[in-house]
Length: 111
Length: 118
Picture (cartoon, each protein chain N blue to C red):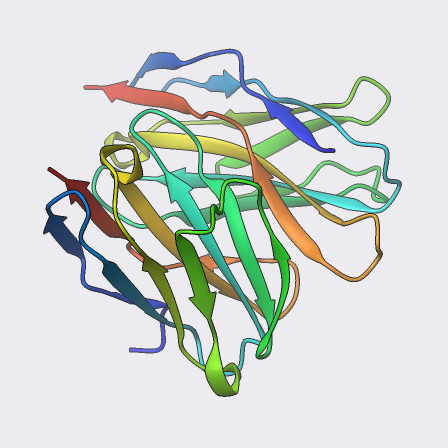
């Protein structure tokens, strides 16, 4: 399968715990994006990588959030000291040109 | 900043009929792209159709077509011969370079939930 892969698909955690999501993009894609989607809303941009460089971060990305893309391949999104407001679907997408290809998302539930 | 507005939270259509989903956008850029993405229930988002802003001709992909009105900043999606499998959230999105000229970002509307009834 050469699509965008995200793991875990669903994570339930207690408030205050740290969580990490992983995204494996389509192999030849140099751009990688993280979006957050809450129920009934459109995806909101969080951050964007071109190769290993993180080129833009949204104001939505508080200092509890950190994203990395070592070696320009897979990416991780870590949320420290989770809060109930962090409950959402976290979408990863990759691209080479204009079209973004999305993964199935990682759903976070913070209790 | 880019904004994308979808004013129809929900719509429904009978199977085999035609439906049009509305979208307006706002951007100060001249070079941009517009997209409609489909997100079926509990499934990943997939691209339905794409329009380059510099092209005057409306894009068409099989049963899906757009009405791109650049001056009005309007980008509606028409689905002909609706099928049950078209039931999904539909998101309008715009894609431009940021002000620095090097970063690309997709901005989404809030979506329209389309239900196709048998």
